Image 1 (tube, rainbow, N blue to C red):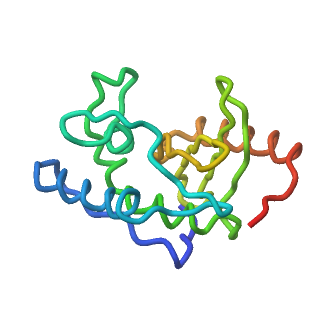
Image 2 (image 1 turned 180 degrees about the horizontal axis):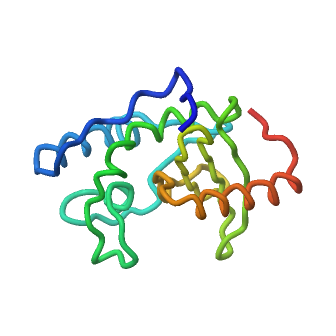
Length: 164
């Protein structure tokens, strides 16, 4: 991993999963996305999904867990280590190392932010009034990293520069 930007906190040290960890992560999540919301190009970033699972927002579970089917996702400690990266990456869009592009997927316009020296991807759905946080996760496979970079290059070539 290349040197990380100075505005980015170090990954959390998480030796194992327990209920106390879950509550700490949830408190951080609520601090960043419920009590105070980041902004991107002047629009508020909200949670994408109003549904709750086991007393917590579905978006929270999606960020800290992995698995193909929503009902079978499992806590992923690697994903948990970076939950506090999401807001700073959003707020530092346009700075060196944060690649961003728009792409139409499943009839939804999405904005993707990729922290290049850190391999962390954030996916936001655009609406006329806000952005909605879909998911965020570390890229752990080189092949997926290359796929993301190809997608960025293809979309960035056809996009106008972002407005701040």
